[in-house]
Amino acid sequence: MSKQLPKFKNEDEEREFWATHDSTEFINWNQAARITFSNLKPSVKKISLRLPKSMLEELKLLANKRDVPYQSLLKIFLAERIEKELSAH
Image (cartoon, rainbow, N blue to C red; front, side, top):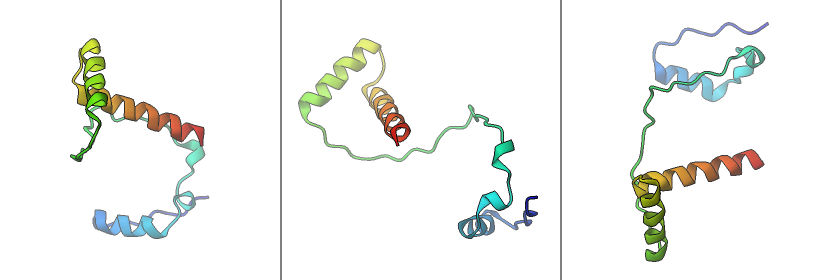
């Protein structure tokens, strides 16, 4: 039987609670359903990335062939590699 979740006054209080408690004491994850929030826009953070000129030109060439902006193609490549690396472990 799972423990009863406390009522939280705000998100900060809830964050503090979860930082010090194990969710498996409160939630049966075996009964959880996977859902997607397709309308949520992920928060983004701007970064500066130095690439060799030749690599950037090749990336732009590949992006042009796919008719997408090169920054978008770079995000796709990164996402694919991250997923591959995480699934390998």
